[in-house]
Image (cartoon, rainbow over all chains, first blue to last red; front, side, top):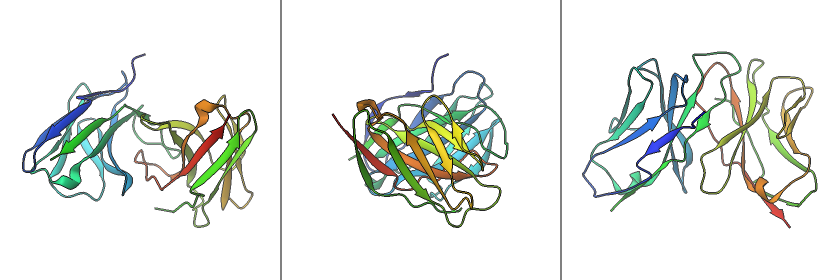
Length: 116
Length: 109
């Protein structure tokens, strides 16, 4: 079974621009979550999508948004890029809805975004 | 979200057992204890999870204290490939993970 794929793997953008990152989950997985990883803040949860609906959201400004398509593929968008948005953006997929123990998350390799 | 506390770093000799501790004194009765690890230049990967009883899988064992205020991830024979940052995370009914700073494990050949 193919793993989680993320495109592009590397990206360089300029302050003020916007960027769209893509994530293809493991086949059959309906939940997709996004995380930001920086040296200073570590791994931080951005949002989760399930069945095309945002189900959970982390503490990030509205410049960060996402969506999920009917095939469970997901995109995240960052508008008006700032230098501090330079980070590794990770996508994770999991099997299905909710259960008390949580579901095992499968992470992709990430997209390295550099804002200059 | 309930917090976890882990040592910043640990070292182990190759082929020796490693015990990675995690404190979670404010854990609620319904929180599950999950462990993930992140190898260099990779996304995190799931290791193991449990609620009350000790758990074993092909990667590791999880020992949970009777009062559930602490747990220990056990790697039975550390290999160089086990060098990673290990995260202990509490989860109940959600798929979003709140990572702390984790423990950076160095394996010495």
